[in-house]
Length: 172
Image (cartoon, rainbow, N blue to C red; front, side):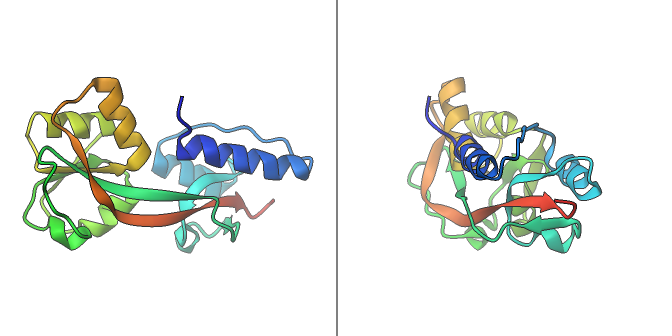
């Protein structure tokens, strides 16, 4: 099995915490709920988040070293479609997973449709119900493989690359 950025990030964070003799466990929650829980101290932190999330969630402190990168990719049924950044998506119908914060931020005012999960987004694209889908590299590739999608292609280069950081609740 290929290592996804979450598995790689978890291994890095586990290794760092073990050197401090701190035992940690990971649980997955919907994105917004996870942030609220961490900020409220109901969870101890966030495994991977973009820089700046602490501006809204004041009780989270960013560990200042990026341990993985997130590649925001555009997927289309036309492998020759040229995209260069978010503005190049204007005029296209876009689908992506609800609470995908980076995509939500950069597509405000565009023709976008938010769905419960990445599988639904890429299935809509496969059925040509939307022009493009946005997902991170690893999730998109896994969905294409798992669902054996034939029409969906990941366009390169990445639409955006972001360093990701580990965040801890202030009590830690």
